[in-house]
Amino acid sequence: MKNKKTIRAAIVGATGYGGVELIRLLQAHPRVEITSVISSTNPGAEIIQGFPHLTNIMLGTLDAVDPQLIASKADVVFLATPAGVAVELAPQFLQVGLKVIDISGDYRLKSPELYEKWYKRTPADAALLEEAVYGLCEVWGMEVNDTVRLLSNPGCFPTAILLGLIPAVAAGWIDLNTIIIDAKSGVSGAGRGLSLSSHFAEVNENFSAYKLNKHQHIPEIEQALTRVAGKPVVTTLTTHLVPMNRGIMATMYASVAEEARTDADFVNLYNQYYEDRPFVRVRKAGTWPATKHVTGSNYCDIGFAVDERTGRVTIISVIDNVVKGAAGQAIQNLNLMMGWDESTGLMFAPMYP
Ligand SMILES: NC(=O)C1=CN([C@@H]2O[C@H](COP(=O)(O)OP(=O)(O)OC[C@H]3O[C@@H](n4cnc5c(N)ncnc54)[C@H](OP(=O)(O)O)[C@@H]3O)[C@@H](O)[C@H]2O)C=CC1
Ligand SMILES: CC(=O)N[C@@H](CCC(=O)OP(=O)(O)O)C(=O)O
Image (tube, rainbow, N blue to C red):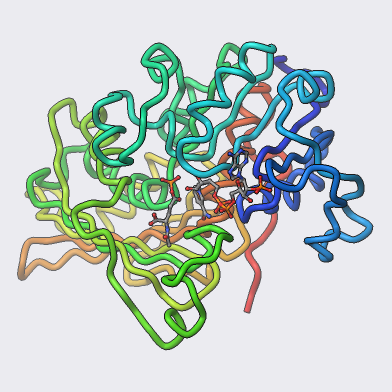
């Protein structure tokens, strides 16, 4: 597929938040044609029936989940489906020769036992878990190329958290035993399905913590940090739901090593680490990002505050969960798989206000 001028893409889960965002971004991508949008529950329906905002943009009807049909129409398939679905579907799509980009958590953990423990589901085939490439572009983008058949897109919280922590961990600037992560997400992170916890009256004017010490992103974060550090890393993550549609803010705390004394030290380190990476923006010392600074975009913005009094650093990292945390990063990975510039079709500014 490398350097092919254009490719044809199919989207499974096209009626969910991640899938609809893939439609929005891919329809404006200069080298991708969306040739199939797929629904397991409503094949045959017109896509604009449920999504009037796509009027005049996306025509046609939803296809069924039929690997042979999809392979006849597309080169690559995005899976924007709930946990457990890609375990079943990815092997079928690979079998018919499609490339697979999975935005669920099904292929992120290398250990089947860990997946079973944290997701409480049957894990994917161990050989496919081994084969899947974890596409955190700014860190392991060099592994994403035309040989990749199965690309596992990082989770929304892990994307913000890992981009915020990895340069400091790689440099040995923070004490690995002291990392605490406090993260907040807008409600779209929970998907489009109805549930009591995402009900307006439950979320509006409210701020709640959930899945304490049980969040499925904990092993994903630890797996990545362990890989970077070269020794086991464990961490505490508390996730919160905040009354907004999009956005994740991850606030990380850790004790700093002697050589990392000031905000400016961190700014320089991160600017070096992310040099030439178009989607990470490091804030100047003394200024910090807010979720609105990245809304609707593929950016991750990061800022720092070193406290000489406590010897700790606070790192703040923000993303749009549906873009950089899902559809945008998935397209960034597709660009790398295709040998295209990683920013192709993704260089739009955030929405403001
Ligand atoms: N929302 C977010 O910010 C992020 C989400 N993710 C992950 O991405 C995935 C999708 O998330 P999101 O879009 O929010 O979820 P949604 O619940 O909004 O959408 C999921 C879609 O999957 C489809 N689906 C459900 N079951 C099946 C099945 N058995 N076979 C095929 N399709 C099925 C449904 O469409 P239909 O009924 O029409 O088939 C549904 O619209 C999840 O794994 C999520 O954890 C990752 C990062 C961020
Ligand atoms: C607000 C909210 O509920 N967010 C979800 C994000 C889930 C997600 O994106 O799941 P995977 O990355 O594991 O696929 C959560 O915290 O579970």
